[in-house]
Amino acid sequence: MAEDPDVPEQIANRRDARTRIAALGRPIYPNRWDPTHLVSGVVARFSTLDAAALEALPEAERLLRVPGRILAIRKMGKAVFLDLSDGALRVQIYVKKDALRPGDWELVEQLDLGDHVGVAGSTFRTRTGELSVKAASIDFLAKALRPLPDKWHGLTDVERKYRQRYVDLIVSPETRRTFEIRAKIVAFIRNFFDGRGFVEVETPMMQTLAGGAAARPFRTHHNALDLDLFLRIAPELYLKRLVVGGFPKVYEINRNFRNEGISTQHNPEFTMLEFYTAYADARDQMALTEELFAAAALEILGTTELPWGDETISLKAPFKRISMVDAILENISVSEEESEKEKISANGPTQRGGRTSVTREALGDLHLLRKIAAEAGVESVERFGDSKGKLLAEIFGAVAERRLLQPTYIIDYPAEISPLSKTKPGDPSTADRFELFIGRMEVANGFSELNDPDEQAEKFRAQVAERGKGDDEAMLYDEDYVEALAYGMPPTAGEGVGIDRLAMLFTNSHSIRDVILFPLMRPKKD
RNA sequence: GGGCCGUUAGCUCAGUAGGUUAGAGCACCUGCCUUUUAAGCAGGGGGUCCUGGGUUCGAGUCCCAGACGGCUCACCA
Image (cartoon, rainbow, N blue to C red; front, top):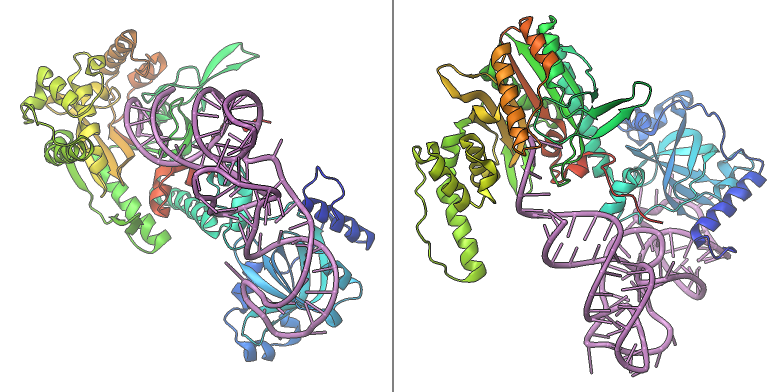
């Protein structure tokens, strides 16, 4: 059958079948075919009716025209059963040679798995009770020249799932479910904010200055203006300009781009919700976020208890709140025991040595912070210079972050690492900021927005100095933003929520690539 | 970027100590079968064992280099 040795046998067979279908006088890629239902519509309309109820319907009400992709063919001699899919659901088609329009049987003989057809017929139930459509005629709609993956095992090659998501979606219902849930999350969020008087906006993805976060940007160039541009790392500074401009409640759901490493929690482009509420502070944002997450879970999944591997995450509000310092103190002993255990199992007994005792006071002392950081496993502590805030955040990351399975707001961030945040009243070293951790991932980050243009200018200058010292993720001075603040921004709280990570939580996906339809992959050679 | 692991038929996977013609299930092809459903029965075809070197009488198997991917560490959200 396969004449050309360069073309795989099954593809050659399908090309031959396509030629034979054309020889029957059938259009092989018709422009139009009018359905009365999609498969899901057939199921919705008829699945509640038993055999007798279907039988009792007037003939006209049982007639329909349904298109779909063939995902199973069971040949029975002069009858054939097809499973027809609209991508979501399947319905069985019963094809009986002598019940078919003349000429259609010859077409049916040429059908392959994956082909698209349109069936006209009437619904009934088979002997085994399965809802089916008895075909009166079948039209050919499009050919699948390539064979589908194994009908039982589907596609398990993760590389191919990512590179050829269309194939994954055809054969993997769980993949489809993941992306349906993701879509529902985004729709729910829009509905949630729209219903609370927020205005959805779109701000620049290409910026002359990539601000609003600490990350390395992607560069690009506008030819006509001969202008270097950066893909945004955050929409933050533009959204706050809009608060200045008189939108007291704004939000944006859109892509950010960060030129950093790729991991199970990081994709170079990722989707972020950012929302700003004037006349609110960080505390209000936390309350709103709890409400949003719990309501979304309840609406979309029917529960706030999310399976997460062998564990369960409860999105029931309120979420735990604990300061960064307390989170360190609470977790460091456990964390030390764990790392000791690892060492012992790996290398045999080791002496414990003189560990620095970690106390609230020690976490305020630069010298001790450095020692604690080093002992917690933070590498090259020197690079943080004399920044107590950076050291504290590093220690938190090393000691506490990976233990935050249940939703936890970490509050009281060091002001040094929060240059866009207001500080707490009476405590200039502490930002009025929080980050929300769920499933050991940072899912949200928010704070009471700094709206004093002079203080903001000073913090930008400090960031520029940091950059001068080699921190290439420190922020740049955004003059126009400072000028915007000088027009007066009301007290405002803002927050960013990682949509991809939220989708991971809702779908029990442990890699961000499983919730991004087309994750970035290195191109395949040849 | 570092470490560990993977890559064999269209798909999912086996492949013993390095030893003849590299196997299985599904898919594919031929035949039978008019209510089956992972349909069934009988027969058949299909391989750059990721790529390139090397060791060896002999490599899917051992060694080196590379490609791509997964996990993980580092950085970040």
